[in-house]
Amino acid sequence: MIVDIHIHSGLIPDQTPEDWARELYTPFKRPFDMDSKRPERIIADLDAAGVDIGLIQASDLRRTNSNEKRPGPYATNDYVAEVVAQYPDRLVGECGLDPIRDPWWAVKELDRCVKELGFKALKLLPTYGYYSPDDERIYPLYEKAIELDIPVHIHMGWTPTIHAPMKYQLPYLLDDVGIRYPELKVIVAHLGYPWVDECICLIWKHQNFSCDIAYWGGFPDDFILQTLLKCGATIGYERILYGSENNFIAMGTHKLRGLNKYAREHNLPEIPHEAMNLILGGNAQRILKIG
Image 1 (cartoon, helix red, strand yellow):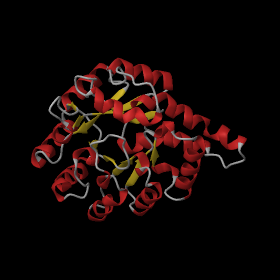
Image 2 (cartoon, rainbow, N blue to C red; image 1 turned 60 degrees about the horizontal axis):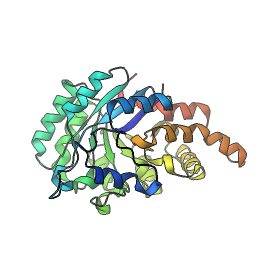
Image 3 (tube, one colour; image 1 turned 180 degrees about the horizontal axis):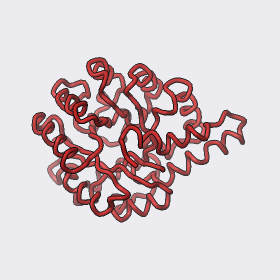
């Protein structure tokens, strides 16, 4: 089974401002697709990429990414639940919220999303929300995630979005979280790019940490291969999860499946077949308890 753990919801422009969405995909010079977040399009893209299950996330960035012309991105958990209900065999929900706006409400909302809506993880977006993941106001959320036995999926690393301060993107900001909550399951999104080595060391240190490689679909084959080999030699392949970031669904699976061909052509080590299966889905099934 192939699982994509990094899919954003939020119709453009109703729930996701068009100008904000364009910023996200500009660096790779990919054609901007207004329909990329529509539920039927997400399913079509999963089909084209050979992906069985997608983890689709809610978000609330109104507090920090709104302006005088329009509100910031806001796709509610109930909206995500409605989308999942349309495709229950293909999509799984991930709770998304603003943990700073009302921290105690956030704890109650996470509890509701897991117990009533069947969501499998919590997604946090520190750089977009202008907070550090080691902000003590968030600690009750981590404690609730431990109680619910779900992973917390946290964006760490760069984004081309203008209103996303880089000071909140550094992977080491999760170190104190791992020290305080060693039992907390954390998925570090994007392997903390460009602070990849720092992120590998973070995950290597904290045994309940893992990572996804979403948004990597536009990177060169050599970079992806060498990074995965480094991960295999340190944290192990069982702590790497495939994710796409919507527009990179097909590109992402194509890249991963073609890495060993690239390795053979350039006389480089290959990713073991069993390890590739873990990255593409086995790890997500285990950590998210799906499939």
